Image (cartoon, rainbow, N blue to C red; front, side):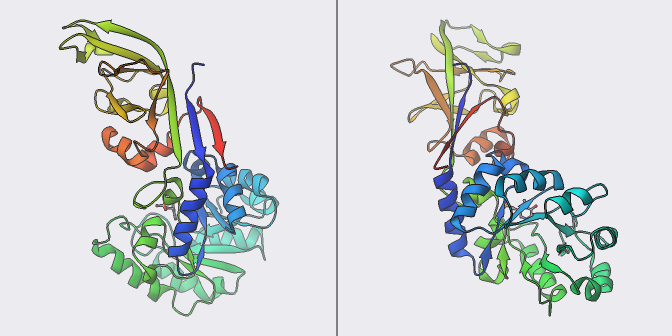
Length: 345
Ligand SMILES: *Cc1c(COP(=O)(O)O)cnc(C)c1O
């Protein structure tokens, strides 16, 4: 078979969620936006619902509608982008809960769907989404009349425990939400690790569920095995791939692998990232192509039928380092051509 096999270990994702839930002071939700960070929103959310998760979050109403079909009635599905023009029918028909980000969204939601629950996102210093302090001050009493089910904000620097912005956002959130009777939420994965002061009533982990930093104790969730299509021996001075960026210094065995930048293995990995034959690292030789990788396997005693680029030997964050990016981007770039196999479904 010419396609790679992406194995998604839902038992590991569930164990990661439980570990984050044990660390959290209150309730623990689950963020499954962008197709469950590339791992499959329906599969991950269905499994986490079995573990006891009752509040899920996605980015858009479209994602919410798809998730509702997978989860059925019951669990709350929060929409971070709020209530956009054109979202009303989806929010109503799939019982979604928009996190209202502006006075305009608040007016739209309450006019279009009076009595339908909502959350409010407030801006405590990230300056990306959420109501600005003066708007929140003006609308707060009115919005509290409800049904207001969550007041939330998001930390800009939670992956760096020493960053002063964490404490300043905590102070701002505490002040802006003082006296609110609805549940409050500030922490994503990084915020959970900052400690209980940041937890409030609900935490919203995403990346830690999928095995990514900053949750360093996470179990790996993904294994990505890529088939070897053919191998060849090249001599000193021979080059490999587009623009001939790899030159063999001695006799070298090159394996050609079926996967490329069209599958999310970005060109920046060229000549840098490693694939693994069991535990043995093998370096990319030459540029990443659209559908192919070329790998130096001279040091292997046997030609393997596949090489792993993600697995226990190499987490998404290790691979991200070689690509000059972050684990989040590796996860959400995972290609659609892979055969996906779920463990623990
Ligand atoms: C993506 C996101 C999360 C989850 O963040 P992680 O760092 O992946 O845990 C939580 N809240 C909001 C508002 C987000 O956009």
